[in-house]
Image (tube, rainbow, N blue to C red):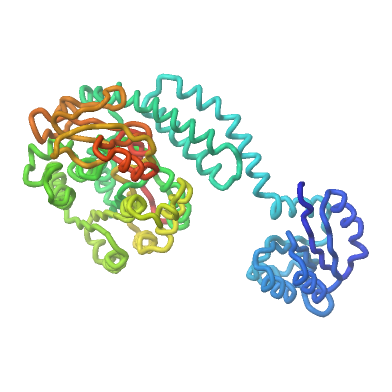
Length: 516
């Protein structure tokens, strides 16, 4: 220990505890003692402590009374209550007053040492252990990446990387850079995998993984066939790591019946991926079968104005004559209104809700300096997502859905990735503005830097013109026009974007939850 941690120990039988004091001082701690509550309070006023051991039964001020005063002086100091009594009401009051721990006399030195490790040294112990565990697995992950992986194996690898990202999240170690480099390497190999295998999935659709057009057919319809009341919640622009942080909140109300990852179609953009979910079709099929419901890139109309109609087309094709509702929540007011309607909506076998808050957060971060500061790291971005969820009408929606006994399916249309490397692309004035994919004619780019689709129809994508092609950015790249290149490269660097090829954008959650 570089610094001597300071302990306050208050007990009216301090003489009997002298061996403990010697033991702790031998371990490098500074121990201040008090024989009554008033002295303990005075010590807390005079200097800060790293932890307080407090006897519950002292003459004058009781331990509980002393605890109240100490918490007023220093709300954050961990207080360990020590008592001879095992009465439940005393324990309840102590816990209600936010004690850190509760020890029953007689205590032994190891119990005291364990309390110190839990409440003073926990952070560094965890950080050291997590770092050690990640270092041990680093080579294993590297070996996995060098193998010829199936999509199932890529899902497992991505889950593992997200797991370590969350484990290292609150630790102050040098492992973050190592993990970031490993994720970048993994995304490079994943892009090669998609280049090689994505075309094959359209040549042999029976061999492809679960993808956007399959969600209703393979995850929603089977539940309806079982007589379940299904509520589908699609959170726009939602990643696996974001799901993992809100999952803990939902675990109080739901059992995760089926938790899996699926592959979104390209482009990983709302216009394509979400419409594919709701229609059960690839974008080209939507355009051919329901031209009135497809909006071209160059059209100024909203690209997702026909989602309810697309759901209806899918129900009709599968001969499911059932009533359903569709809701798009863009603000808290509408979210609260939806919560009020849930009892009435239970008459429907199927209800669908789109939540746009995470996507709005992502775009706001790009456009607002303040939001960039608030979400300046991946960890901060996750924290903002969690804060939104905890304090928005969305959390109330999920709680009410659990109370109403709905079967809830949570998914997303695509994820997002933090970009940092601009690459040049040139197109005509009709070329779309997305930073992770471009569609247009006469596109100019470095073929080695992108994944190109020169025949979009083979990939289930429409062509605005006969000569239109699609190109996709990979890894952490983003497209910037040569005109005013430096400005746009600087403006969009370190922003969250989607539309291209990365694990974060393409490998996304679909979860079926049962109310507890």
